[in-house]
Image (cartoon, rainbow, N blue to C red):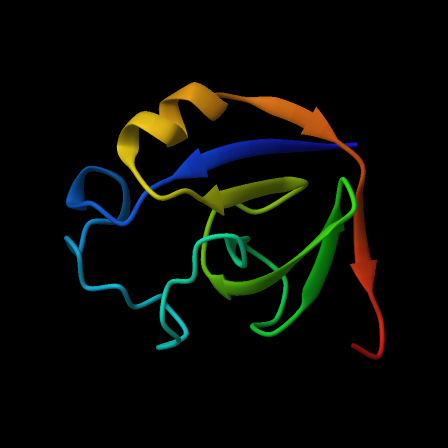
Length: 90
């Protein structure tokens, strides 16, 4: 079980404003982009029957930061816990 948090594309969360780019250089994609420390870019994660792609950097350990469309949506998501599966061969 991992800690789930949320962030948005605004400068309050990502430090780059609406650059819409992740640490890997890939575009930010709502519903796909997650930030995780310690996993290679491109790693696929399954969380609650949804597949996400690690293209941004976040906190290390069992912590996933999920991109949301707005700061308000990220705040509504808050902190949650869920099983996270690292997919192989995706």
